[in-house]
Length: 299
Image 1 (cartoon, one colour):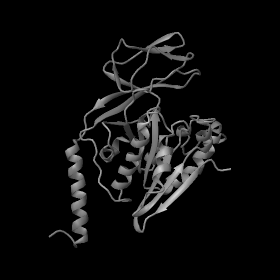
Image 2 (cartoon, rainbow, N blue to C red):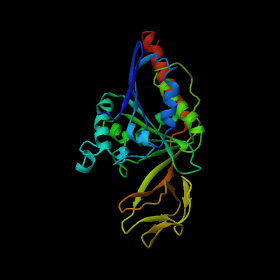
Image 3 (tube, rainbow, N blue to C red):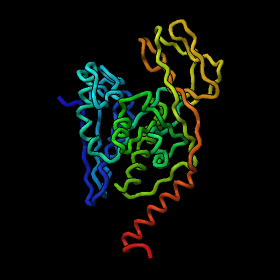
Image 4 (cartoon, one colour):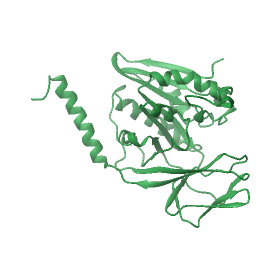
């Protein structure tokens, strides 16, 4: 029995093969609600857009996952414990659509109460990520958290974006998810419209992941997403061992964990990037080339 639901919308013009995923984590419902509300009104101009409700049983139960974290199951070769799980089989259902896709957008939300929207992508796709209306871009997760949907796209040198809509309990996440989807579809020519991205975004490169080794992990206090820490900042306890932050690094998704070898928190740092103006210039060059091509070349 299938654990996904697919709604396909085809444009009259040739365009991109696009996949939009929602419900990868069943208790992050903003993407599900956003697609429910957008589908009746969306008119696809060009390309083929596949909307995939990605984990129906988890969505039904309002649980992050049933047996395995689905966003760690998109692997070329799944370990046996993943392969035989509900989520492993669900990933196998979705992978053929990712293989055909040119671009991917995967909608998520955070359980950090004051989290802000941000986009996750490969470092090579930072400029493309400028299309989204967020202040922050996070890159370089693949070495530390393999098996995500965007990880799978990155393996194929294709564009994959994970969009975090903010705190899961904030009703605004539904509207934020809708805007991210619309901006994505507008940029890739699937629908008409104009995007208004936030200029000059901050870029965070993930440099580490802490997994507990000695026992349950308990955070020392509440940490905001992207909170900057120092060497002597106590992050939490791995069993009885004190775990401290690294100087001038940020922490992301600091979570209590009950079993060993779980993802407790990510570590990152701010990096320099090309300016938003450079991205706009790149877009203008692309538009100019399209005009010249349609007119038979530059004059």
